[in-house]
Length: 589
Image (cartoon, rainbow, N blue to C red):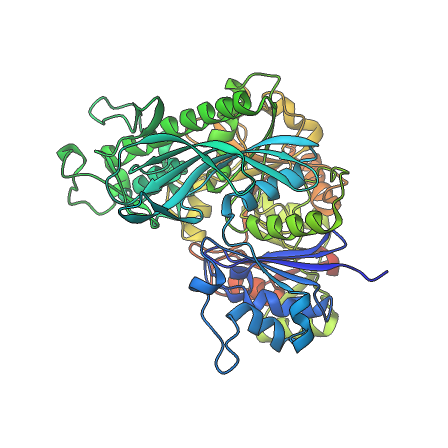
């Protein structure tokens, strides 16, 4: 029996590719890791990577918010869309005349939210589930009342999910750029089933967050910075509420947040002069910026909590999977744990951004073909990048190129460098999928250093208010942090409270609100990283390492060994630990 090869592609920002062989992920990677362009789309470099594993595909599944025909462009002469043409040129698909009976390129561009849901559901381990998708602007939806037409954009969706490939829409909010009264309708989906649809001229939950993110001086897509800034703010009665009740549902206050679909939204400083600009060097120091960041974090997480509870009520299913861009909000994820009914089983997808739709697309087509009703096992494995073999000759070339010094090393010598207040870069194995560094492409530091956060932020060229994560031995996690009922947190999706007395011990990784985004580590998930943290514990009594992504501000995470060397050469980071080569590399700056 021939192997079944399926590649899922996400075309837009955070472009990505997931390659499946018989339903198992061979590799999954965002284009930016290869192209070195942050948030890069059109994953052509990732498509070339397929050839390292197979010379053919049974199916190429392409996902986006608009169809290939409408927005992908064409290849000269043949008229193929860009992705079909690229796959043909690489020899991955058959474009002979008789291939028409077996179309190998499948366009899933009209079901963006369903692909977010598919990624989360198939990875959750649940047999059935309620999927809640909270996203910026998903599929572009043509709307018409018979007299005029417009384009709507899906923002929040609820699905009832089941095997092999059931995703029944139960609720959807569609946002419009222009004025329209909020209305609840029963509209039939492609299966003929009715579901509630709210069509409004309001920003969605993520768009409200993006508006405040831009107001704080960042790119709309950099919402993580707003999340880091929020605890510097406070409740401010001069700031109007971000949400209001309208037509029996909670929607964003349009007087405050003006949507500009499909791109972001704007804070209306004309109506609210207290939110207008002041002439300062750093607007994040202003109380109106900090307080609005506080408001958007606290109010959106409450709104998503309501959405989750409504989803359970709509579907009757207490297995909940959460995805879409808002799923990366680790502050909100922790908030749900304290406020949801304990009987609700929550799974938050760690690849919740648009990169996850490549995984969802590949899985969905695999399940549609095989019609397997056996649930896929839950997996927390995010070490899904391509495999790299670091041979001695290649390493020698890089050492010569960057005038580096090699020190034979073990865990003890690495810990010694950390105790001397050095940043040590860790490069091993396959890169992490998603935005979190989990010990394969990480920068490490001593969490006990008083001013460690400021020092590392300066070296990484990041804003002063941005916090750092901690990687902790799984068996010690509950002694140091309140996990609110979780046994572990291996994918770094929750910013958790530290126990009393802990902040003083590890000040470099405790945020101003007393939280830390943690990664629990056991010997099975990452044996090298586990042993390194264990050695640090033996030397210091602290079972935790300061962990941040191996990159500089504004750059994608390091992917290749050459990326790693270049990053050291262009920064004040001097040490690179390569456990697979049993050496520590020193590059003097």
